[in-house]
Image 1 (cartoon, rainbow, N blue to C red):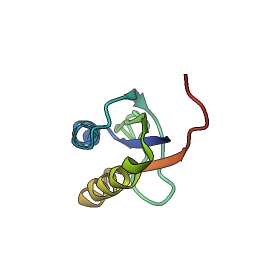
Image 2: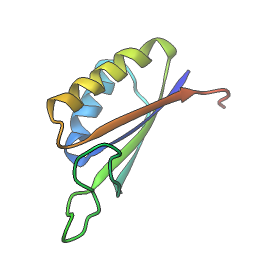
Image 3: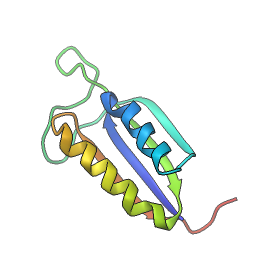
Image 4: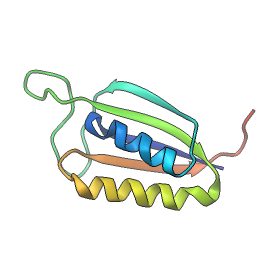
Length: 97
């Protein structure tokens, strides 16, 4: 099993849920308004007057065979709107209850 943390511009939220649904990745926890700044480019998401955009994030846990299709679909979404920003990070899950 893999854990995938996704940080993204709020505008991507519905599209990410559609990707999860299309890949039968049912469970996730979404974190509403989060602040951040990308490591490469793009505008900060601080929710201030100077930088009014906000970001969101979510974590999901997927079967090993669903990781690559999920990351591929998220990457395509990111490439389709590069100024919005989207990053995904995956790691192994050792135990769960």
